[in-house]
Figure 1 (cartoon, helix red, strand yellow):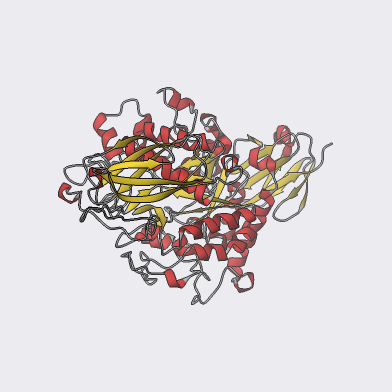
Figure 2: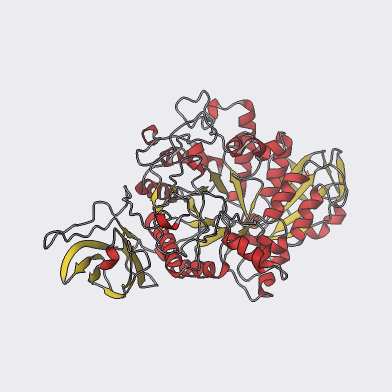
Length: 627
């Protein structure tokens, strides 16, 4: 980025501060203009009573800030005269309005109220997502268009073009709200939406990972109030909302990137320098300094400047913005994009500050690595990270190792040690490396991978895969549309794995949201998914129970989930032959049980001596009597 463009003042429209600014003119030409105050408001009763207010406007650093109603501890100016950072102490400050002023030569040339709001009851004690949930991941632009009037916006460049797989298709918050009945009926209990804050990239902005305003929902999705309304509608259904939060990068169109507060706000190179994407460098005892620098300071892509979380003003900005969204919208958790690309120590501070305000708040970090050792490094209290005297304070991680196993195992039908169900078995053998195995997000696909129905274009395989995913330890995540058989290959472009949900647009020929309108294939996929999700919803033994598993033989994998009240036996015959199992081998898992009910078929099974299981079949058996 060219430094000679850093200080060009901009006039962002649609800011939450718009309409609050009061301009007062004294002594002729004296006038102060403040375009933004962030955070736009705050709350009483926070654990941390200090607040960093950022004021932005042309040359406002020349003025003297004053504050009425709270203590102004200090004023920070940077090498950019368009910014002022005010350090407030809100201890003892009640609900109401403070008064901000800018003065010059003793004259007040600008003033405006700053609101302190009341917190919602029990806000700090909110329950977050956990292993009792099934998370439904959706991309709002591709899910449903509930309000066609916001498909375009005059302030934003990327225009609606549903014919372009990389264009904006018009899905929005209203579309999600209108189809909550569908998601609830499916049996999912939480929604993870890809980012929703404004992304003003001129092209491919629908994914919204190159954000241009962190305090504003992208108007093509709706308003901040609409986002809050979504959270409230979910809570009325005893469901949860997980926000996709990005700490590693912003978009080039972010208003602060266009006018950097400090030269070290982002990582700058002589020319564009890409990150090396080698996330394992963090736990590599032999990593070179230049490799570590390229990982942490290289840009993810050219349109996404890399943020310097070690910059104290930026770190505080990110902390407060995260807390602001939790408190304002009432969200129930974060998924953090590209977590290992961040500078780790500032991220410890970021997480600690959030969890100080919300002790039960769950945060899952994306770390696309393929070895349990490197994945477990990032979970809080990791024994692997402890070797390096590091503790991430990140509660949850994503199990990419299991993802790799699930997307490969069901294609392989042999008993070779490394193939088939042995891949899943061997992945679970490393669970001792995770300090909290129940707080690991498990998945077979997401918005960055091939759809599972392209890996396995067969309902019988889908049943086996889902039977495993929904009975293992951890927090299952499914991806919108796969429950009706949607397909998509990443090799055909990201848009191919992010297709529109059929029926989400008024002009769609077919509506898969409506049971009566689904095709036979869509209904078959939906019915299997729905039955498994609703069964799992009421099974604490699956949510938090223990696991006992057996070495796969002939590509038949057997494991048990159990607690003090209940036992479930899962049998996965991944081979192309029928098998008869001698149940004496599973005496420890059966624990005296001689009968069971298979969940999907509701068939009653005798478990006294042998169990016959057809080729390419999975059983989930509730053990329901004891000798």
